[in-house]
Image (cartoon, rainbow, N blue to C red; front, top):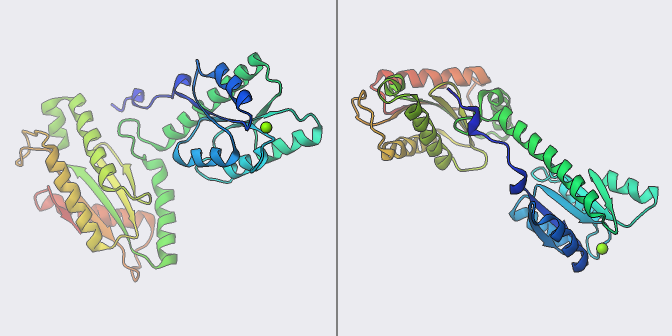
Length: 308
Ligand SMILES: [Mg+2]
């Protein structure tokens, strides 16, 4: 039922290539060669390149080595030291010829280089080869940790992340909350409206979770068929209940008809586990079990509600 087609590999035409050269004419030549095939952006210094990367993530960077201000090598090092940018392949454009200068490019983290004056065919082929690899590895990374239908994380990642969060919360003496969520009478929903509508419903609920849990530390997982799990670091029981209430309200606002539900629309049941700093129950599987127990109670009490 989970369609592989929902996550697609990015196409090369969508790829964004950042061209960095202090000499406008050089940058223009390179941009002219590439702009029919890819999205391109030209900047003229290392500083501008780093500033651009803070706004938008290019898929590949063509980087001049010799520039006033931050050199190409330093720019590359800064990119490779930044966790959210280090996956971007950097190709140096260089007129340096000595083995020592070449070594410095590799050491800075470049994947390849192109000599000046630029041979157009060589440049096009190097760029194409590295972009293709980049697209494939992005795709694999997304596939292995995300659920194909909803785009939420899948359970492969859950245990590792949860264990880390528990350790972190112990170390910083901060609370941690975990939600286990279930779409009410989902099997009956599928029976009434078909699996395609079921998929649409899962996507809509996932969107609500992404919207409501918008802090970078929050994470939502698709746990099973219609079961979701949300991890909220640094959130105590009161905060968690407030968020659960918001989720229930937003799902009600979706107003998705559900004829087999006494509520007439799609709703959720939520089980909440919230740790306090004194709490001893502190292993990933125990935390999940506690939230699951609370979820069971929420269902027993008539669903469309949360239990903490
Ligand atoms: Mg230069």
